[in-house]
Image (tube, rainbow, N blue to C red):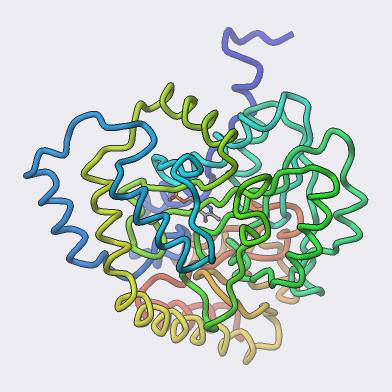
Amino acid sequence: MNKSNLSKLSNSFEGQKMFEIYNRTKKIKKKIFHFELGQPSHPIPKKIIKETINSLKLGRTKYVSSKGVDELLEIIRDTTKFSRGFKPDLNQILVTPGANSIIYLSMKCICNPGDEVILPDPGFPTYISAAKSLGLKIKFIKLREKFNFQLNIEELKSMITNKTRLLILNSPSNPLGTIINKNQYQDIYNLIEKKNIFLLSDEIYSRIVYSKNDFFSPSSFDKCKSRVIILNGFSKAFSMTGYRLGVAIGPKKLISKMHILLETIVSCVPPFIQYAGVEAIKTEKNFIKKEIKIYIEKQKLFTDFFSSTNLINCVKPEGAFYLFPNVKKIGMSGDEFAKVLLNKLGIAVVPGSYFGKNGKYNVRIAYTNSKSDIKKSIKLIKNYFKL
Ligand SMILES: Cc1ncc(COP(=O)(O)O)c(C=O)c1O
């Protein structure tokens, strides 16, 4: 019997365990090298800060439409046309408090308790937490390291039942850094169209890709009119994690339900935050290119080290800012390795198991710290494990 006087579902809430590690590091007295949170290393562009302050001075501090302010909705329409080749209608867009909320909002509006969702393993933990909190049945599509973490379409096909309502995919991926290309997405789209399933395409890292033409959005198949929902936001590309600003683009019936739900929970997203988002999109072209170059240099410090050891295997990331090295040959699970790194060396990384069973022998490293801290951490690992 459930002795608690809280809901049964509340027992299944998991939140984001990465924050647990971050909180643990705050209690440790010695210097900590932080690689645990997906917090970009580049500073927020000054123009965005300026616009935030300007908006506060202009009194953009009151309730606004719960769908988003017109200026932001319009610039999102334009930038979607530029980046994805179609201009969504106004009623296909919803501005949200952080992109994380889109996961919950879309699941809640698409699925009934007991319905099935298919999630990537390894994948972003909020997908699991949100599904559990809504009483959904989770099926995991395995992303195997030996296949460069790409899904197998036949396997996906075999998992779909008449209870399956939603598939979530994430490209570039957190925690893998991998990208799903156009051909792969074509097969996936054909399948979900035939089976009448929604696809939540998590594109939050779409601006952080390492080769110019690599990013592909499955939204170009249906222009988000029937089954594709884009999840995007300002946290990663613009280093605006604390602003909490996200954008969903999807079929208008679904967006209108997500809108009502959002209005019920938070009323609206603060307007001065939204105007900062307008400025971010205006500034983006000059600034992101430079940052990507720096991420590549930081990534290389780690990948050169891994290959020099012959004991740490790592699939080379094509986007985002994560590495997901496999430490099995060192003779440890990812959990054990992460524990040693934190307790003995003061290096905070996330065990791969936080992202699913397929991450048992991996750890996730967000290479967002300074180059000098990356070099120092590599030296500490090298010396400790005699690599
Ligand atoms: C894959 C993925 N999706 C969504 C989010 C949510 O981003 P935010 O809520 O900061 O906008 C994150 C953040 O870490 C992420 O890594």
